Image (tube, rainbow, N blue to C red; front, side, top):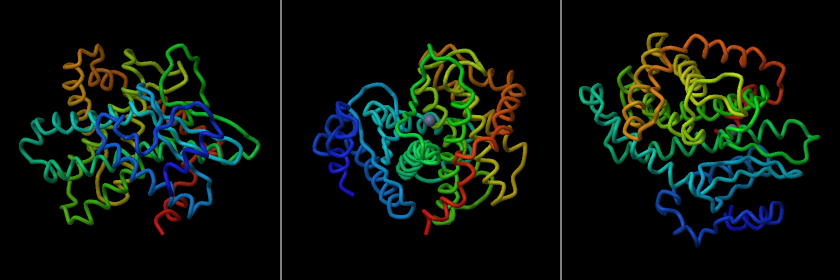
Length: 328
Ligand SMILES: [Zn+2]
């Protein structure tokens, strides 16, 4: 596809969005990073159009705030990413790797691969998480043909009211995005003949979840205390634990890992997250929140899970089928 051609179509459907043309990519703080994200999104969009017969378009928008959106407009589906999101993602990935590198366990085991390769891998993995999270919203929207126009917003709004259905949709989109990324990590280990052992998995998965946690925190604008049935979006820590459960589900189908691995990843990522955010003077001690509320958080995730059958439009019901179609 031609990215600029998509912009024309989107401008006609949703005027006044300040979309960024490819020749104006200097507007990004890190043009090289933005071009890598563009390449990933373009290839994924082309693949979906060709294999799933969904009229998908995407664009970057000139807006500083950390936000992404999925739209349905008649029979067109549109993903919009703010340029501020791409700029911050670049920093989140680099900062997460540099803190991770200094952690005790990494000091003993070493990084799974060279740092520059790790950076490239995580640009790819995080682009895939973001893209497929938004694409899951597109799948949710494409299920009901009666909906003409709808928008999902990722940015948290602390004046919004609780909406159970929206929590179900967000957690579903997270599971879909994280599932694709986890499958890519396992493929990466196979393709590069890295040892598929606890140490490699433990390090790659912890780093992955650390970066995803930082993305949720950026969307939520540093929300402080834990909440359950409040606001339009689920609390970022609930989303992270939901994602870790999904990662463990997928990895355990391919390797022999179990409950202690789950608990250990939770403990480890949240401690590294504390180190990062204490530096940034955050008031929330993530490892304490996880430890003190794990039971209630898992109960809330169960409540969402138990309602899934009522929502036929969820992407999770189609993840295997979609993955097989896209992978062919
Ligand atoms: Zn979402």
